[in-house]
Image 1 (cartoon, rainbow, N blue to C red):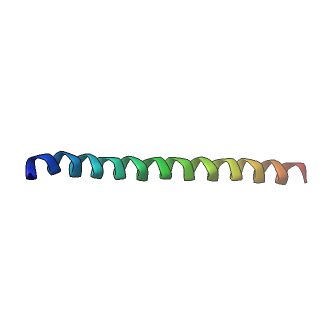
Image 2 (cartoon, rainbow, N blue to C red; image 1 turned 180 degrees about the vertical axis):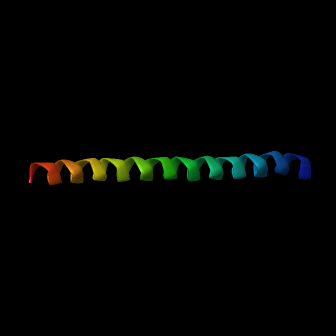
Length: 45
């Protein structure tokens, strides 16, 4: 029983870690886009 559950738990943790990394990358990307737009507005002002 434990042998069938263990791989799933390890994969689950890995999946959660991957999701966290993906969310951080997306957040950084959004911040970069906002900063770029803000800079463009400041320059044109």
